[in-house]
Length: 362
Image 1: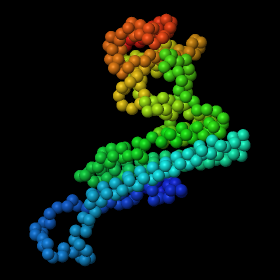
Image 2: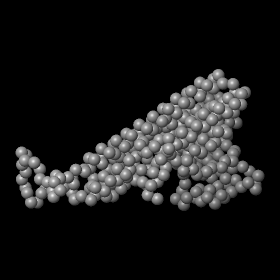
Image 3: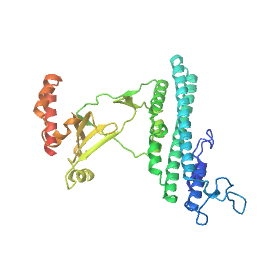
Image 4: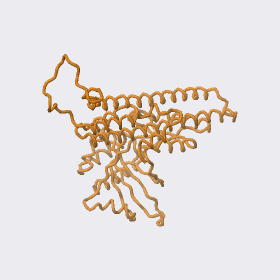
């Protein structure tokens, strides 16, 4: 399906076509730019008069009318379209936050023992959530359109490529880089209040080992908010502590360690008994500047009665190199745990054994 048709079929009824990318207009400009010959000096007349009217063609139009569509027209249209989409996105988000404010204020005095009151507030919250999902679809539809029209421009007007410039600019704008997860968290709080439960919090995040079983699913980026919404209607979001406060999500960075034969990778892939994975993990964007988790995951077959485990210890980013080259001061760190951090002898011994085994494998 052509994008122009895809765009027409997915315009939100409550928005109408106006706030969306004018893909057809930009496409028309590209067609005109690609069909005309590059501007060049007139091979017949090499002189002009600045006191006489310009020459006309057979239809009485200015002879140079075909050159009125310039690259500047495309750039100007791109600028206005980006501004339009950003303005609409921020306007909708502002309205949604205002509506959430009103519901939160209503909850402070609402009688949640009155089922009709609960149903009414939930219906209002459902409507806000649906509007948020509509907005995300709007953002993705326009995001895709800008990428496609810029790719088309550079293909048909290769003398003036501009995709790289505009994509970088687009990614710096609030409608693309903006984090609106606060809307998700606040909606979750409202649903939690209506259910009578509470928002989950991150507790015990520094534990050295985990015995757990998880199921993981691949989700398209454009479906993340829809999945979050489907879950938060029944369960509170899990808030994680980040460098900027609490959030329902944050980026996870992992660097896996292995040898030239990828021995650990193939062991985990084949689910061999006792197969391990070693990795460095940190959270947030960019290079690690604070805490880094050194983790070992061990696979154990269920039929043995044992449980797969994830064990880890925490270091500062500046200590990563010493772990990798085997110079990490294990004894000194253990002494610090006992004397300054109040760890028990058993905890310190377990930590020492884990660190020693991981460093030896590295």
